Image 1: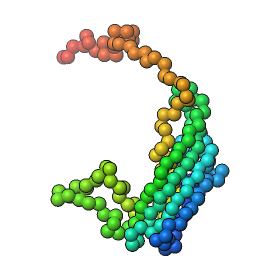
Image 2: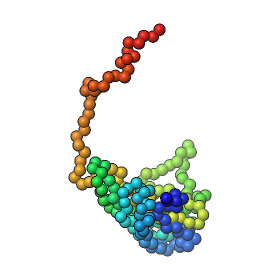
Image 3: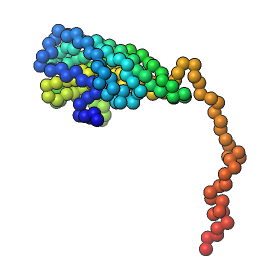
Image 4: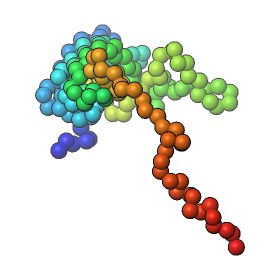
Amino acid sequence: MRDDSKPAFSYPVKVGHISANAVSVHLSANEAERRALANLWNVDEVLSLDADLQIARWKKDGVKIKGDVAARIVQSCVVTLEPVEADINEPVEAIFVPEGSRLARQAQNDGGEMVLNPDGPDIPETFSGDTIDAGVVVSEHVALAIDPYPRKEGVVFGERIESSAADDKRPNPFAALRDWKKD
């Protein structure tokens, strides 16, 4: 049984050891981590997970993680339930700032509503303590890229069969109440 307090894929980074010069890091999931990720992502199997990241100081007290992740997973086809392999290649970019940092505050308009630009950069995530987990960042980016309805190539759904109320031969459950009279 897996300990849910420990992430399925973890690469802790001490914030105090990060400099302004980016450090290159290559992450690769081992067999136990791939099994835990398959369970987390609700897929049949994770064949591989690799990430090449650049980790650097961002502004004064933040951390920026940028790079690419590649994964190969096996899912069940939603039509035939046969195994379907999928390749995932995603860019990774995340910024972390300490809790309470002014960089984590969201812009608000005069009415107190948050102002979000859907095309703009993401708001930095906050962290507490002196460690962030680059493995969790990688895992989250892959999870968002997984096709929720995988289909084996060439497989299509059959024709839809719809019935109308006239075709329905079941009796109306309220028909017995039709003859009831109110006293």
